[in-house]
Image (cartoon, rainbow, N blue to C red; front, side):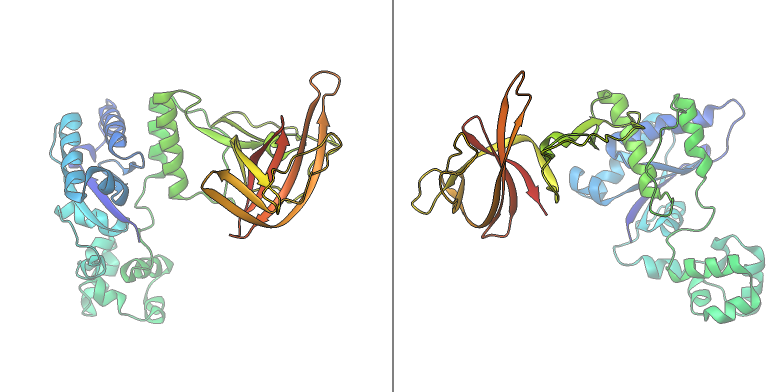
Amino acid sequence: MERLLAIWIEPLALEQPDGSTLRDTLALLDSLSVLCPFTEVVRLGLLVLPLRGPSRFFGGPDAVLRAVRQSVLDVAGVEPLLGVAEGLFCAELAARRGLVVPVGASDAFRRAQPLSVLGRKDLTSTGQRLGLHTLGAFADLETARVAERFNQHALTLHRVARGELSEMEGQRDHRLARRLAQLRGEDDLLEEQRGFFGQRGAGDDRAEAAAHRVRRRLGADAIVVASLCGGRAPEDRATLVPWGSPLVGVRDSAPWPGQLAAPSPATTLAHPVPLQLRDAADRPVVMDARGSLSAEPTAVIFSSPLRREIVWYAGPWPLVERWWSRHRRRAHVQMVLASGEALLVVAESSRWWLVGIYD
């Protein structure tokens, strides 16, 4: 379970009618995002960020806590309560008490909490009559016994008490992110990639928020994503476009005669790497005017000390394009090295180039 740093700022937990709470929260989010781009607002007064990455960058968790505390003081002018634990539920409880729970101790910390932290008065009063005063005692009940006395919501809280769920239902204010985006002027909703069943997780929200902030600071071309277009070779079809660009609604349906057959390499290189092919006599393998190899390649040399043996190859597949204007000639060869790597290389301009790597 992810170790989180929770930041509790009680003066920001109550929304003011003049909108100052939202403005202060947005300013604080932007300030903390400089320290960690995955900072998120759980609800008013409560922010959270993963601790592992910033700890490596700043030199330890104590340095991160000092930087976060100073950032909150500079922006909000108040002293925050900071808490560290595994999972959002435990991290918020730790923040309310200003505790840093040691690594691996979150389970014991959770079990020691009073039953009232679940926020159900009926569950608390019934549990007290049954002699259940802590989350640990409630967690030790069999699920069937909980189902006999309580409803479905109590069963979910039972999973929280057992540590099977890292946060409670309703612990996050899902509308708050939209309100902050509107306040920032980013209420234009881009088409987004959903999960297999259409779901969207907290990680998706953090990644999108971080991408928005990077793009706003560094420009529209600061973040690029892969896009598939038409072409005959894999290195032609894979292009990078700015993140958030409108999706093209029409798929390329051109036949592209001479297109390299599947499978395509998992990785195509934006800048091809020069290499050499050698035969069994250690002579350079070249491509003649008819698109044939001068000899069977047995080794590939990336640089003078880096040499790999070829155990299998296929090709070449010559390709002549735009003969009426540029007359571009090239030929692709697939190969498998003795070390297990599968490569796609191309002969062009009297040289060999690495253009793709297969999984």
